[in-house]
Image 1: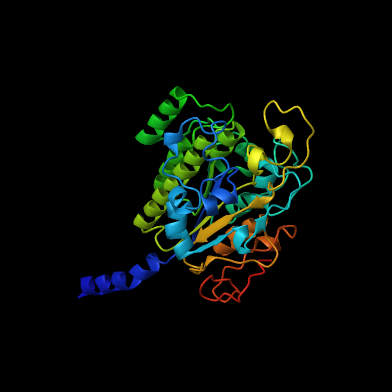
Image 2: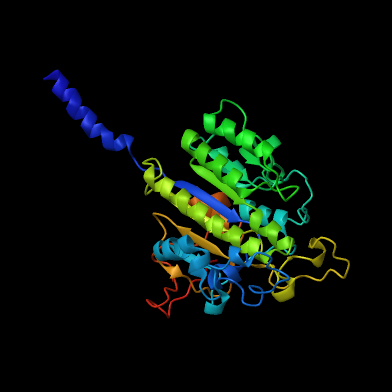
Length: 380
């Protein structure tokens, strides 16, 4: 009888041990334009020999068919969650920083506000506490926050010397007690050349992040992919499109792994965005100021379109709203408070300079195209 009573007690306590806890995965894809995300290959660039050296690489990607370029985003995320940024449909999200280059963009994305002191891509330690650093200080999340990036500036952006965050970026090797896969990735990365001096191939960022997730179960995981932006700066539109497609494939694999793991299944919010936009037509290679293009010797006007970004999200608290029409423009800086809110924290309470969280709730005035066409969303 005593054994039976203990068995009944264990059965009753089991649901408590499996209580859902919110998790967040944020993925950024550096320098990807909204035009490709929502309209597919650009017809003004797609068949230009100047920009496309390997046509067979992108033959499957067609203008006007974005689902071929980013099938997971359009067939899964857009169907089960929300997207923002298709300006042809009255949906807009912008950066608020005036520099429209990567470090200021990541500062805004991760800290929630623009800082005039962060105006270049120089390797300076970020004086601002990001939402990742703050969340890592909370007892429920301590040592449960991790970031993996392809660009070697992320240890500075996240100020690892001060924050103590788990960060692996650039060409860093994994340290500490390693799995066999981590050891192999370290060896393979050291032997693999990258076409970029400060950005490793995204596959290493992806695989390091996935293995860390399997081993350590972070509640907040940030993955920053970088290839697309660097191929764009090189003027390789075919490689730029291929990098976007690979990023989408990785996010699909990541989501599948999250759903296969009871620790993450039905408890995880997925947020996807970028750090800045790019120019149009002949200026597609650059963003911010023309000086960002290697070898550029002319004047340095602002590149139109650099402020225009995009967003996709899905998760247990995000309605299946599809593309959201915005009144005015949502702002990149809202991501930090949104990320914190998804984990149950009020970031604005400790950082009043941060923009308020996006309103993804089912009761928000969302523009559900084809469902409630008269509705609108302020976002702010």
